[in-house]
Amino acid sequence: MIATAPIRFRAGVEGILTSNQDPYHGAVTASSTRPRSLLVVGAHAADFVWRAAGTVAVHTAAGWRAIVVALSYGERGESGDLWKQPGQTVENVKRIRHQECSRAAAAIGAEFVAFDLGDYPLEAPAEAVGRLVELMRELRPDVVITHTPADPFNPDHPVAFAVADRARKIAMGAAGVASAFATIPPPRMYLFEPHHPEQCGFWPNTFVDYTSVAERKEEAMAAMAAQSYLRDHYRERGLQRAVQARYFGAGPETRYVEAFELTTPRLVDGL
Image (cartoon, rainbow, N blue to C red; front, side):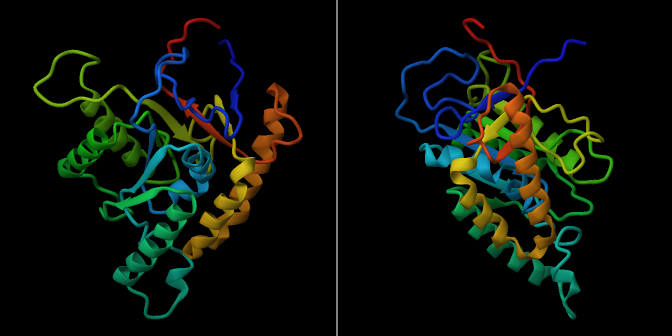
C-alpha cells in the first residue's frame, strides 16, 4: 500500500477549500457572488464542537457560511453531567443542550439546526433524510463534514454518516445528468476525527491549522457544560495533531490542528 502524506492547510489562507476554488478542481476559478458554504452533520448536539469547531471558525472568519446539524441532542446518552442532577428529565436536558449548542455555534460563526430524532439509539426515518436533502439544496455546500462510517463504541455515529452520505448523493444526483429534481454541485466530503481513531478506521489525510481562531473553539467548548469532561481531551488532541503536522511542513507557530479524512477524490490540473 502506498502511504500518502497528509495535506496541511494554513488557517485563514486556504482552509479545506480556497474561497474561490472549484470543489473538485485544484485550479482557481472566478469568484461567485454566492458565499462558499460548509455543512457539518453530527449524530449528537456537541459532535461538531469537539471535532470541527476550529475548522468551522477558520472558514466563517474567511466569509464562508456554515450550518451545523445535530440529528439528536444527545440527551439520553451524551449529557453525562446533566444526569447527575436529581430529578432530571429528558425534556429539560434537551432544552439545556439546545441552549448550549446555540451558544457554541454562535461562538464559531455558524448556524445551529436540531433535528431532534432521539439518541441511543438514533433512528433516522426517510423524512429526516429528505429534510437534510432540502437543506443541502438550499445551502449548496462546498464541503460536508460528518462521522466515520464505522464506530465500534457508539451506536449513533455510523447512522449519522449514513444519513449524511445518502442525503449528499440524492442532493447531487447522478453527477451532471439531467434529473426530474433540483440538484447541487457535488460537495467534497470529509470525516472528522472520532474519539477512537484507530478502532474506527480513520485515515487522516487533511489537517487544518486553527491556531488563529483557537480562542473561538475554546469558547464553543466552554459552552458545552453537559460534557465538560471532554474539553481537555480535545484540546490535547489539537496540540498532538499540530506536532504531527510539523513532519509535513508546519512551523512552530502552528499550535492547534484538527484532522479530517477526505473521502471524495479531487481532480487537479497538476501535482
